[in-house]
Length: 298
Image (tube, rainbow, N blue to C red; front, top):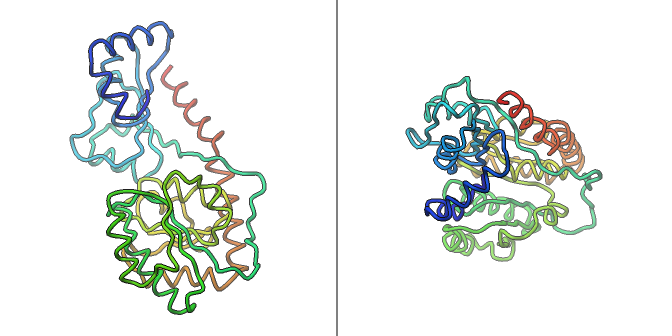
């Protein structure tokens, strides 16, 4: 089941739904898999009409009473222990239904783990939807501290878009960081950016997993991230990067400094991040986890 609202909205129309139902019946499927919590109502309806079990993937926090499953829902897959606890405690999903299947990302064979030392300014980057939950104001405040100490010799890159963009651009001007901070559209391929990023930062106030952080790790980039949700299990503090308190620009700037000022540490943590991503969060490993859940149900 496609997770995008456009499809879900179209399926609410009887004519479209009947065509979709006919197509699903012709596929001779063994089960229905909804790829986001948003698809749950349609999965439940299809399950009843096709007499099939269904499974659901949930990759974002759920509020109480917003997600409902019936007896035909055989498994709920989620990607982190933090989200599992949310599903049990807040969404009231029976714990015996839940399986943790970590997300996977493409892992390049030979990333440039030791970033080139060619005299250019180092680059600190982040990928995020520009919303309050991602707390990029803290990222900019930390950037100000680093620019002051390094006398401007550092560049910061924010890749993403969202409702907070105008406020963040205004804050950039207030902090006099126009020459050091670049905003880039969310459509920019992440792997192209990560080839030139020396330190990746994630300042989320809440994070179910941290896919962008995992992408950085897969490219051998050491990470400084907030100690919340799925990031706690993803980033090994002191090994693949550093964890810092939420909303603490001084702590964030301090850990970024530790990495910018020590090329050997960057290379060591970047290599450890790459190895962890390759061993535990590759696409084949994720697919194997999903297939294992299918086998349980079928």
